Length: 243
Image (tube, rainbow, N blue to C red):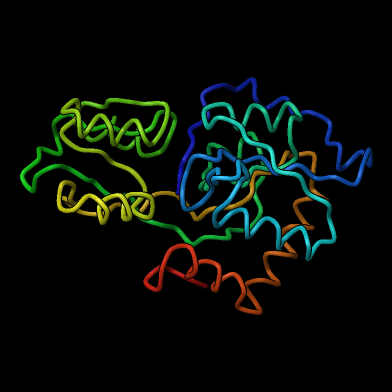
């Protein structure tokens, strides 16, 4: 899952929650809308994908009225903290650094792998590797000895590979798999997969303990009745990790 790094301690100043303050019945779900199959904008201009199905079901079980809000990835945590929406549900992996700024629900996707993709089997993985900015993948590459090229979106890292700007890309395996399959042999997985993060959860402001508990209860109910596994298989295929 996508893994954002926190770069500013100032984000620790959290906004007052509309949910906690009881100012309305609507809970706003913040997502990127540019990360299929987790979340994307469909032909009707609406948020779609695994997390749309999941978020709608969680809200129904919690008896909440929810609205979807899209936000660019590199500012998705600051805008949660600022109160522009009430949760993040955007393929965000749980890690210690983020937990210094926000809280997380329990995971709704098990820990997943990241992979290298290149144009040839002998691509130098210690050469120039493209990754999305402010992700754990970019942090991993920066410490690997390779030369890191960062781009704002996942689409741009694929373009950089195809344009010859990078020797390889490093990103979530689930995201890369359909791109490789649809490339008709142009792109291929190389090297070994790497597991990063502790699973994917909903990001919640630290002041919103009640909202966190509400969504935790709903996620637990979906795990117990098997409906979460059904959604994982629907969007990620039969071979995906489940609960």
